[in-house]
Image (spheres, rainbow, N blue to C red):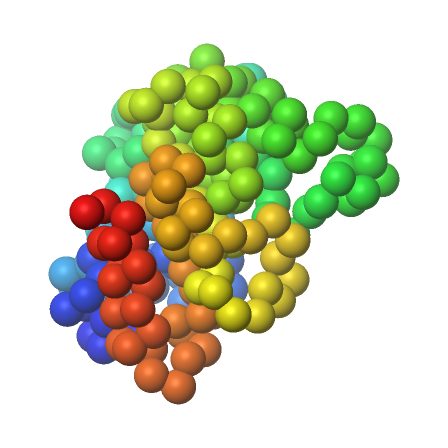
Length: 214
């Protein structure tokens, strides 16, 4: 997939499924092929564990972005920032609210804020702890921009081209909508990897993004 898409795509997400199957060999293979890696492991543990794991993650070849769950709290986020500064040149992101969750799912967890309110609260916590940005659905990008300013990175999953199956995602938007809201990076997985022609699918997403930038 990397060889197929590398003429069009420079960043590749390595998530839990692939990393659990192949370990560090996965981001290393992407790096050897000339790609940059978003290592999407969503670390969430006590600060000492995240500090140790973060040192490993941030030092892996090709990793330019990696993340932790912002709900792990201020001390855990600070540990991630410390690990990143000690060993790597990467940028670390706080995962706010998973795109598979909606207001009712949050309510069942005892969270009375709306998804947007919860995302903004976690984005502010992440920024205060020194993280470089957050992972947030397209629905909350504009609110994060207002709360955290133009230089705070917003990486946006839940991006689905018009007419694509949303799958298990709840808070989704098209590439055009995500770009217009102010996203820095769009994460587009299954609409490309599951397409009959992944190259054509990727090119279609890029064409839509370029239209917004003109």
